[in-house]
Image (cartoon, rainbow over all chains, first blue to last red; front, side, top):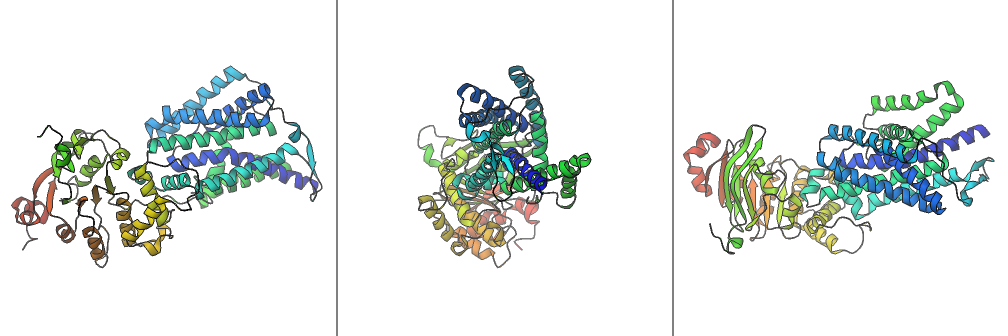
Length: 288
Length: 257
């Protein structure tokens, strides 16, 4: 039973991380129809910058903020300087974002080298906690990660469902042309949402570098997981990203624990099943 | 053409030599269109005549390949749509473009906020706010007060068309471009829309594309007829009804009987 609890907690940890990574990706796709293949690179950039800031200042919180801001800025630049010029031409954007992703990965390799980094944890998060009901001990940072994902998820839900800016985003997801016709400066809104998506990815990068570790290749790993999560959960919705992340994270960990040989199969079996039965994703809306 | 400032008050809309090319195909070519402030103008023409392309150039949805567009004397040919909106231009689309996931109230709120150019606000939508009050007023004008908390996806076709008019009326519009506002309406719903159009404030300039001759002639004082991307005829509804060319290409010769 202890194994089951531990594996479940591992699954939830991974789900929290996948959610943080995928939700920005999903938001960007939902509003702009841009499949941003540089999303993993934004996450890795956030992780590296976060690591460097934590090393320099000793403050973990500052590192998370700096990582988020760096990736937000990079995301805004990518949309402003490159992808925004080909708005509406999704294939071109996707290809361009692959190129951006490769260039960014190379620049990061140049600056931070090919070694693996792990962010030094603050004292508060470095130990473990004995969980009262389950009777198992678990790393504090991983518990904090789940709480962090929960807070971010609720904040995003509030932003999108309850605020003025959220109404603009929801309207844009429904119909970009009409949003433009109402007088909204769509280019600036796109850049802001790209920055928001980048910020989420960057913070996820710092958190990933704290709970796990980051190295060249982490970008592609999280890009792939984000793609799977939004395909399963449905593009463009916070709830979809959460559900997709839960399913994929848990499936991956249960698979690794109980059927190690076929561990990776479960994730992709879920994806294939969803694509076959409900191609818009579990919580996605069908295209008209 | 006058060179002094009086030009500013001369025409609500003044399009000169408008052309729009898609690849090697000119959807519209060499169109001149002048609409006075407060005028009600209908644009007629068979399918493919270029009516919607002309609209898209006037609103800024598409950039003109040739010619100039002036709004109240100001050259807006190169301006994006959101800047023309601030000058008082509004449009509706032929196929209802509405936000399915939003409520009527949220939609009208966005219509007001869009004209004012405010969007980067992360505080809650609820609460006492001038824009929400304006949204409620628009719902009343559009006859949708009792539906304001409904999701747009739950509205009937006629109500959606009413909502579009409500959106177009946000924040004192000066020129309304309506692309087939009555398209797809049942005969029972049409009079309601006609009444809504005729109740618009007199100072608002209205240009509408309309296939329904009855609505077009009832609500408009002048008519422009497009054919094959060019202007075929312009005049009062009566003059257009008598026009030989118009009968030939559009009315098929038999309409006036």
